[in-house]
Amino acid sequence: MNRRRGYALALAASALIAGMGAARPAPTPTRTPSSSPTPTPSATQSDGTLQILTYRGYAEYGGTSPKVNWVGNFEKETGCRIAKLDTVQSAKEMEDFSGQRAYDVISAGPVLAAKLIENKQAQPIDPAKVSGYDDIDKRFRDMSTVSGKVYGVPYLWGYHEFIYDSTKVKGDLKQAFASDRVALKDSPLTIADAALADGSAKDPYELTQGQLDRAVALLEQSKGRTYWRSPIDLVQGFATGSLDYAQATPYYRLLLQKAGKPIKALQTPKTTGWVDSWMLGANVPDTTCAYRWLNWVTATNAQRDAAAWVGLAPANAKACKGRAKPMCDLYGRGKKLDRVAFAVQPPGDCRADGGECTDYGTWGKRWTALLAK
Image (cartoon, rainbow, N blue to C red):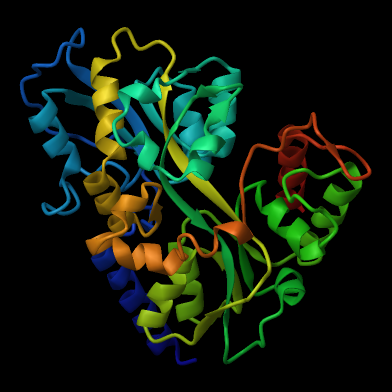
C-alpha cells in the first residue's frame, strides 16, 4: 500500500472515532484526573460529593464535547457534586487507581470486580434502591451477584471478534494466532480466546493446567505479534497495512469499514465478552449520592448516551433506541448472547474436565512470561 494513502486512511479512521465518540481509543493514555463542574451541593450526603473512578467516556462532563455532558446534568438534577472524576483507559490502570484511594463508585470489569469483593473494597448494593435495575438483562444481573448479594449495576457490555483484511488473508482463526501480523489485546484474559481457538475446553475461563498449557502454546507460536493496549493501534495497523488480523470489538470493525478498508470478521461458534458494572465503595460514609449516581447510570437516557458515545452496548434493554440503536444492532443484542462466553476472573477452585482449574494468578504469571519472550 502507498504509505501516504495508508496514513490518510489512519487519519480518516481516527476522525471517525472522534465523530462517533469512542472513549477508550485515545492516542495517548491519560492518568490525569478529569475536572468537573462544581455546583453548590444540596444532597443529604455528609458533604454532597462523590469520588468516581471509571473509563474514559463512561462519565462525560462536556470536556470532550459540549453536547456530551451527563455528569453536569447529574449534578444539576441531583444536587450531588462530583468532587473527583478519575478516568483511565485500560483495565491495568483501573486496577492501579483502585488501590491508591477509596472511591465512592467504580466502574469495574469482571476481574477487578472479583478483586474488590475479595478485598472488601466494595459493599453490597440494595437493588430496591436502584430504579430500573429490573430492566437490566437478567444474565448481566446474575454476573454481579455473589452468594445472593448484588455487588454491581451492569452498565455497558461488548464482545471480541477476530477481524481481518479480506484482500490479504482468507480468514482462519488458527492462522490468526500463528501470524506475526496479528494484534491481540494485552490482557491475561486473552488466554481464554486462545483456549477457544484450541477447542479443548468447554468453558474458556475454567482451564485445567493442561488446557492452559495448550492455550499458551498456541500464543507462543508467534514471536513478532503486537499486543495492543489502545484500540487506535488496530485502526492505524490496518490503515497502514501492517496488520492482517486483530482481536477487536465490532465497533472497530465498523470504523475501519467506514474508512473504506476491506475488513471482515471471522465467523466463530463462540467468542469472549465482558460486562462493566458500577460498584459501591466499601467505606462510603453516606450512600445517598452514590445511590443517586447508580440510579442515574441505570436509567435509559444515561445508558443510551454512554453506549452511543463509547461504542458498546447498554445493559438496559430499554436504552436500545434512538442514538444507541446502531450499537445494539451491531452487537446483535438478544441474538448473539448465547455465543458469548462472558469473562469472569478464573476461579481456581472449580473442577473442569480432567482436573482442578487454574486461577487468575497463574494466568497472570503465564501472560507476563509470554510478553517477556
